[in-house]
Image 1: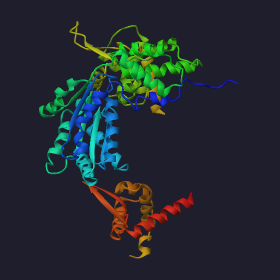
Image 2: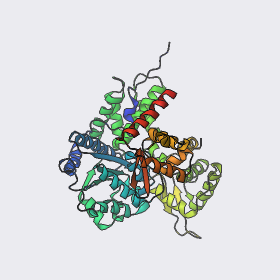
Image 3: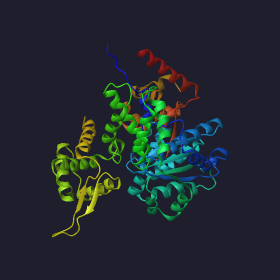
Length: 394
Length: 89
């Protein structure tokens, strides 16, 4: 009888949201973070802290912050301090302070009404809740760029000012800002900017050797013994190191290689599966990135992708893209967004590196934006988007 | 307070049952779940509060109601509802 076997022992250990018990090669940064927040354990309420964690994609920003959050919550609990660490992804909250604060409040009051007040009111309510419970909060805002891009510098200013308004009261709200591109800081007002610039933790790219240590940890957690050889780890580390030391890419490669091994009913991962996996993962466009896009951003991207699938042209002009998008909207029974909104989407998508834009320059007549897909095969992108959109439609 | 005042109406009992189940809720949501309108819900809640059975917390314009734990009668009624619901399952 054929029995189904898998190289995996526990696949969930390769999930992007999994926080491993050990962070190889991030110890100094973790210590630094602990130093910054020492006061929260030793003299809670005496001050509030604002920290910036910055680094390239897959350099361990999120996991560093979450690891720290788990540690400090535990330590606070042991000392009888009511300290909460809440991690919010600003892009998932569509860059809205309102939604960020709402997620925080829902932690304290799971049935809090979802609407009917402003972000400012919500912030007041949050402070009231913290006061009532004499609780302290470390709010980690991941992908902070989305918030800054959407609402400018006001949200951060308000979040930092809320403590200053209450000089005599205990300082209850501290912030960890997680930002991929430090350039966004220039969009902030000077006081917020200077605080954040002083308390910055920079994460460099992982080297090949460091990636190897990370992968070895994950292999031990997620795979059955003897299914992943040293060579395989070496190969994946090599591939990821050439992608700017992106650890998340390395872990996704590892996971996909395992999937290919399972699909071929192989008892071990062979280099061929890694190569297959490498072809199927495009480092710049990842599932999590695509699924966090808004509905119309997805529709627009789908339009662009299906256009490129059908033609041999390398570029599509903004006008053409809008026409294709209009058709896609009809297919999905959605009301199409106007030009200005689409223009914003294009800018966002290009900031994310999914599409590339350049100005056509003044040709014979007029000027337009030319859109291209630099890294991802259009057919793959189209397939992935259709899958996500179809799931949503149902 | 007379016991018939507490259990005087379907609406009032419904509100108590919802609070026993969900623990903390704002008026609009209580009204929606009980199938009552806002004013009626508010009146019931005020009556229940005057009996000391529920209490509320205010966040700006929002009031969030819950059972007044610690009040022996409130605890008794909450237990009654819980065991009644259990027996129903």
